[in-house]
Length: 510
Image 1: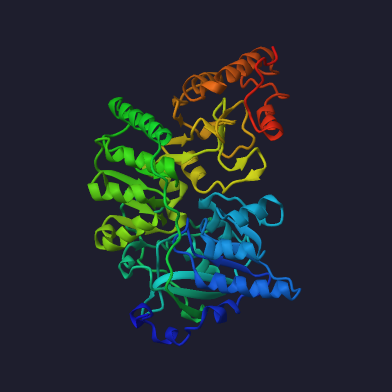
Image 2: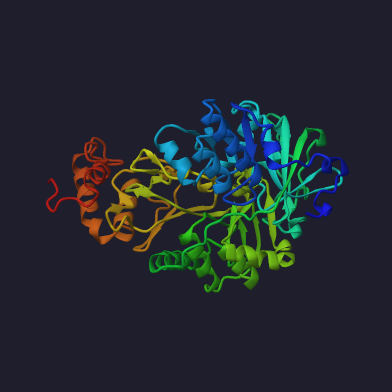
């Protein structure tokens, strides 16, 4: 690795192997690491730490840490530590199969937090002391400041609060990332907060590197390893239909004068359906769009190249290996179009509301009245976490939730009488889209919402059963504002657990 990546001479003297750095982390400590959705996370130190934990367990010694990050990471971090049972507590978002298994068998404590809350809750002291921060960097500057890599996440907060810091300088990450970041240092604790001076998605209000006291840096590790984001599946017919319904609706909103011709700043969750929406926007005729979001994925790079998207603000990347290679080749172009911010800014409710973001996120299920479950399977099994969807659903101009109308080969309906877990209440939900159609819930009472969702979004295999439940609830429920039959409200979920199929019997009770 060139010394150009470590430009502070004193810190070059602290370069050590990953195993030496990992030895500075001790059982029971709270360790905060960089990383957001498979980008910008440390690669070498977590694996060395996992090997150390595995050896300790083999010797009969207890060794676990409390792990904080920006969001999900990748196999070299979450996966490596979860496999050796090295995590006692994890927050705020995860997507690793081994971590998920331990969460759902009850052996790993997990805090599912809104992403906008994590930094401030750390500052409030809700998570206790942060012992060690492990941060991936593109470079260390002459003054000791750290140039982040492909995500910023909560790294600013971790560096500010941690007692000790380990920096992984990753030579695989392109040096051209330097200058793409915008690190804002104007936040404060109540009662000393001031308005954040950001009025447009492409405003720059901060610095291009992370400040850190060089004396806190106890080790620097040189590494060369790629980010690990899974490739997206090709756009299928269902995703294409969902995207088509949504884009038609956005055109309608422009025609009605409720949205400007270039819309409002877009926020998009990660996944195949949001990527299909982005692909649809490329052919939609919209121009000069903006994004104020958490993650840039493949589709947004295409929109930036074509000029459909004028600029994009985020806190991390979620790009396939192919998109990552193209990004590196074109980094001088993208550095003029993309701003990487701290997570507390990318998801800040004040900014989401001021900018009027259009939130587009996935869901597990929605009930007849518009309540959304985006985290739990059958009410108790954690999938990934709420992420930042709540930050945009509650505070944005419009909140859109998307999903196929069925799952598991049609045995599960995404439209159910009552959701088995609530992440977003009906008060925060504007639009529901499935491949069947789009339900606009704005300005509707609960019973009106139910009619829209049954008629427009439910799969035909479940439409009659939903209609039957709703009609009987209108007649027999204790209250008629939000009619429910409590003994039956979650019976669809129980039926799936018992039989593997939500579809009711041919002759439902009358």
